[in-house]
Length: 146
Image 1 (cartoon, one colour):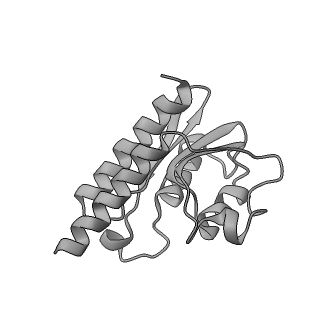
Image 2 (cartoon, rainbow, N blue to C red):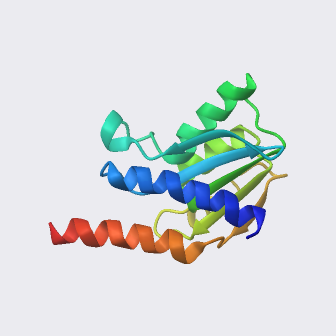
């Protein structure tokens, strides 16, 4: 298992927590120097807040951990491609690297705002994409069956 797969597995664990809480199952972890400094999952239903996406929760936790607003040198792992809002926040935080699992052609930043991330940020897409996509599909299939 590569380091990217290991951290994406932890992001998937966060997504599973969201799933169990009836939230859209997106999970995120932020890593600096091999240590997780922030984690989060969707909490939009629980907090009644449309901005409470997994990435926003993780960025807030990571900046609290570091005691500053910038996340230079950090890698953000998220199970689904960030939306425009999250990509903007990731860009403002100056995250150095983003790794995501499943693409999101309906809401993902690459479709609507491909320059939202910081110019020096590198992106790796498709890490454990099948696992990430299957969790999302299972969530929405169960919703349709209710």
